[in-house]
Length: 123
Image (cartoon, rainbow, N blue to C red; front, side, top):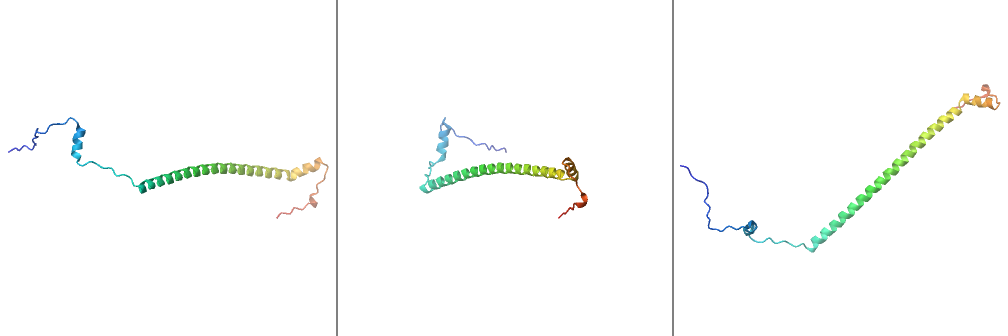
């Protein structure tokens, strides 16, 4: 035997055209909102102020770090340039104090260089 499991709907209740009204009827008791206590309001205010202060200090610290980083890079560039200048000056000094340079300077001014009288001392 075949059984019909479909449910028969009774048409006794009148249909409403507003679905929101039907949903409100099904909710039951009205929803009541709870007001915030003074402690909760104060806590939210304090947390907001602390968050604002931390955000400002974070941005300030980041800005200071970026400024210091630029200063460090500028200083490192100056140090690198000074080292290069020192190296080029050392090379120029080494060229000027070479034996051939000293002999040419002696000839230019009419001086005589006696190698037998010269002693080199290195430490």
